[in-house]
Length: 190
Image 1: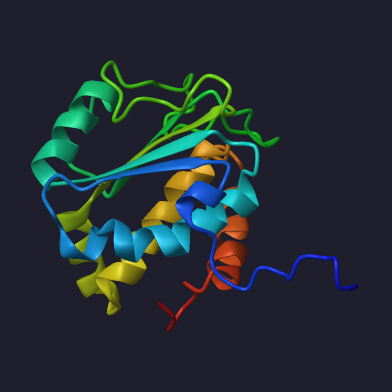
Image 2 (image 1 turned 120 degrees about the vertical axis):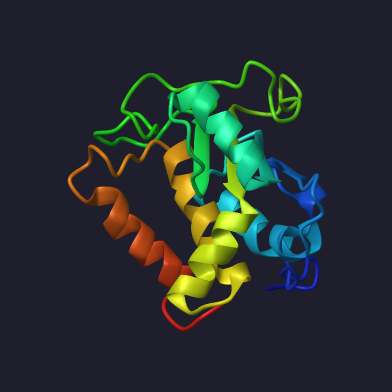
């Protein structure tokens, strides 16, 4: 490195430094799902896994809201922990379509948030997480709610990238296990 080269970046990139616009919505103000807690961990992962993505939306909701979304978009009158809705990002090669049912990707009739500017890159998708369900799962599994939310975020992100554990003969599970270790959410961490 010579004197004219810029010094290497030693800090976590700010959201404005990233190519992908992250929209984090927390209308119920769940403290575990605050943007200050989630964004510093998630932004570098999205940049690493989807460097050309223009935007990703995450919404943290109640069980009631998740049940409504599940009923409307999956035809299932039950709550669940995480749902992913694939955007127009070119998914990685996989056997699955990126949706739980193996159908064509679904889009919100009313998007979680407005998508990125037209020249910002392809929209990765929407992830919806039920915080009360995450709390129950964390308690059952004996770890922190923050860790459970990270697990669900990574799982939802992989669906937005085209992985589908329902149809891929274990590929998504293997990739998810590797990424949990890489991003600090393997057993006993986070």
